[in-house]
Structures are given as C-alpha cells and as structure tokens.
Amino acid sequence: MTDDVSRAQRGDVQAFERIYKQHSGRVTALCCRLANDSARGHELMQDVFVRAWERLQSYRGESTLETWLHRVAVNVFLM
Image 1 (cartoon, rainbow, N blue to C red):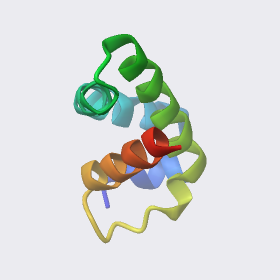
Image 2 (image 1 turned 90 degrees about the vertical axis):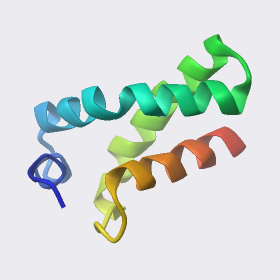
Image 3 (image 1 turned 45 degrees about the vertical axis):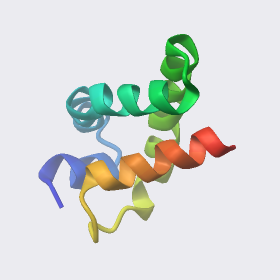
Image 4 (image 1 turned 30 degrees about the vertical axis):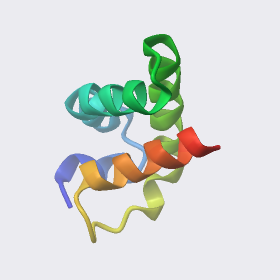
C-alpha cells in the first residue's frame, strides 16, 4: 500500500488529492466508455471519487489501487 493511500485512509485530504490527480484520467476514460457519453462519464467519475473517499478504509491493498478504483467505477455505473 502506498504512503498516500495510508495517509488518505487516516483522513489526509491532500494525500487523497494526490491519488485523485494520479488516477482521475484513467477513471474518467473508463466512466466515459461505460456511459458511452462524455458528460455522463465525467459525472460518474466524480461519484467514483466520492465513493472511493467514503470507502477507502475498505481498501486492504490486496490488489492495486487502480484495480480497486476500477471496481468502484463499475459498481457506481451499475447503480
């Protein structure tokens, strides 16, 4: 688990902001593909990172953070 993830899990907003900056491009691309619509994809991406912040404590590091965010994105899309 990266230092930023550990810090974000303890409530460090700046660490989560770095995670967001590192992964938002890929998450946005995935959401746009899933929604087949750019505007809806960007809305979904925002929802993904809100959900990720709320559920970051459940991330145990058994997969990469990128994989975990991918799963969060798919779940947000399906809901």
